[in-house]
Length: 145
Image (cartoon, rainbow, N blue to C red; front, side, top):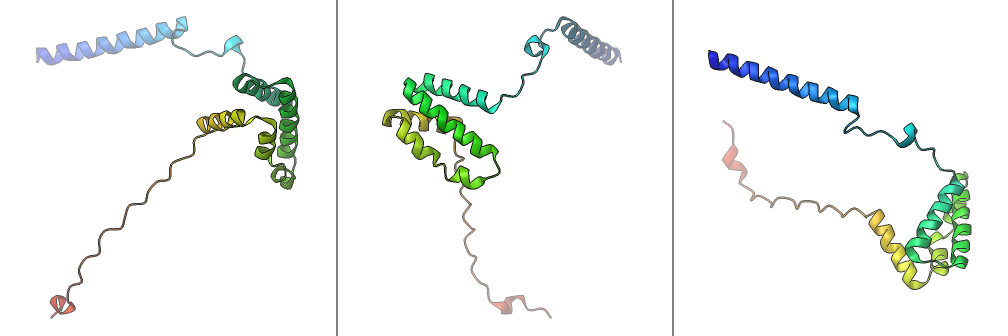
């Protein structure tokens, strides 16, 4: 009896201590994720997204100024086609073929590797093979009276 009362008191004490610790952490802001400057990020405009992508590719692929300008124009075309209601324009853009013309062979290979790393293709799931066919038993075995 004394053991069960002692055990119940110990559980109550540990629960109280844990709750007090959590309240202290909330007051002090420890372990809480607060956005920087108390504000959420504003969504980027298409021009800002294009510029960010150009700068990232310039850094990753070591692009020349001429390649940057060509890439910027291609990405702007892609964004205009993407945000318009004309889906034929997006299909007619041939984005990857134009990237091959802008990039060197080495740069294009690194671009494809980065793209694959960012968006890996799911591996196809193999369907389980069907169970082996069971031997047919004669019908006369299962005759009902």
